[in-house]
Image 1 (cartoon, rainbow, N blue to C red):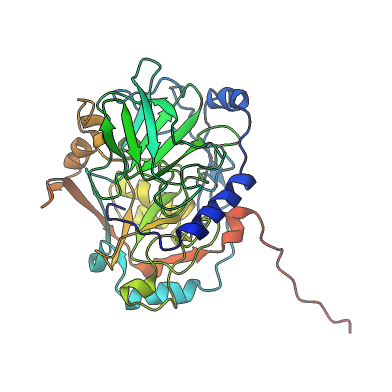
Image 2: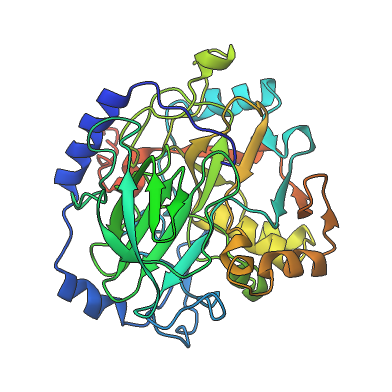
Length: 407
């Protein structure tokens, strides 16, 4: 989320991150490198059907992406075992508190773009992403451990404080209080995520927290990051311009919400803004890490008559769902905000603003903050449900059937 996210339990967070690190050890770099060079075939499964539709393989291999040539729409980060890349199975178990959560959102008038219910996209986005090359400047990372011990390392236990990595010249953090910045090292198949990043010297980047996580192969899950409240990689769940242009998003989405109560898998702790901190009851509140699903079939989505890019977002909501990855910081108590790639990914390097140009072609208008924004079709939150965490975790116990009485 663009607003500042506050962690209220840094010591507990540090312990949880350390535990998560032990549980999510990386595979070897060599294995990840081989897996990263494999073309990704992305299966699509409708929320209401068991049949799947394959899509053509990506025409471009991981390793050659740059700001001028970012990944095509068919590409997605992480391996097939990532919860972000697993379609929600037909008949998936619903969380016991799903009805209470949806009811409370309706009562509090929480929804996409607040009371209007239309999801929105804007060119400023919330996640600048940079693809490093061996020729890029070598930069030293200085991490301040703002949230306590172990908050400068990710799932692999690699401490980023003092690490030297290559970052494209001109790369800039998100121009909001979270100061997010993501760098993808394609030579080693890793994603570097930073929070509250700022340049403290020509070749020195100071960050409040951050992490290194694998981005491809069996080890790439998108989990165990340390730069947002959900403990996800910052690339996880963001909407990219190339996906909107292609009309298909083959992964779960990430959303920021007004507040949360506790956490569920795949998050590791109750970070972010608690509902009690904004005067709301914890009853019926979302959890950090909750997975929401749009209860619409492909046929129902098509029947809305929405434009191709809007249907792409809606299909992703129905097939893969939306993971709660952050909170709004107290400045917005009504909006479910989709995370998207920021045009800083391109403009800070002197390239054309891809999201801005695309949204303008969709009929977007200039907002008060100077960004180009566009509304999607209205989606009332009563079309949402919360999926039980055990579904994508693969730990749901089989349902018990009734015993038949013998006559």
